[in-house]
Length: 377
Image (cartoon, rainbow, N blue to C red; front, top):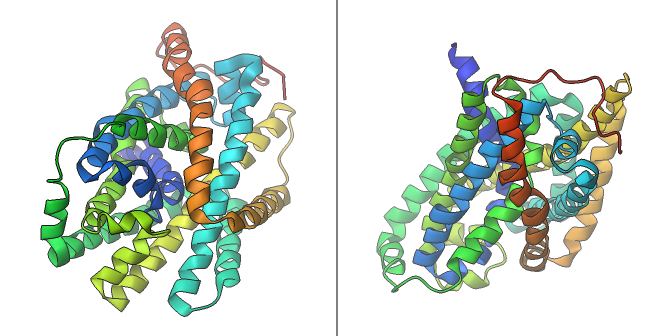
């Protein structure tokens, strides 16, 4: 098997998952504070590794194999196969999450320019919208190429960030993890964090087309958890040196960079972070476009390319308006509320009913039908 084939089959879905997760999952650092560090450094680390990462891997493995078995590579077909007529319940939750994530992205994009230049909040939002719109218009191949490249840049930056923080305040990091036994509730935080981020897996399904065998789909899913969490882990360890002051920061990444005191590194990190915002926004909106594209294909039609661009622009504009609510409130209230919806209509069903259907389907790829069995739109 050529290296490029292995990369697309085993690693690309995990990289796409990481790219879609990062801006809403740990790009600003506020999410890691809310769901992990608020329980204490040691408790948060246990929740991150023993709960969230494991759940990500298990649900990704089940979802990728379910998508492969039923050739359901957009969330509409996926949930029609999984939930039948109740498939639309996921779409409701996904669109809510989409608006929350796009709001976080818009707020962060504007803040990056404002915090570094002292002005230009609107310019940051517009620049992000243009970049996302261009990738969404270009389609799956261009999106996969950008995500693969930028993920490597991202990993390199987070490794350098952790090394710099450990060098600058390593004793504080070590001391933070000696604060005593695990605090109550840490597992719940891990479940909540995993659950709301799992809601973006259907945005990854377009990349699962490369998985042709069960071992590839399951292997890609199991690898997706560690691949997606590694940058967050490095970021979390670095932030722990600022505990407990970092708990009150709206954008902990900025306070961490200020503590390092390197203007050049601050600029480099912000550029990489801006790229991750583009990745996440692109992946989330592309899932909606793929859902509509599947709708057109069922009717033997092609989705107009201009519709991809106009839909993406409209969603991004709506997210920018919602961003006026403020970052801390969006993450603390919005993400926490949507978590339970994804647990009930996605995580539990795919790990129970989904696995049963996978076993019944056998190990071969089912040929896609011209029209889905469930015709509800």
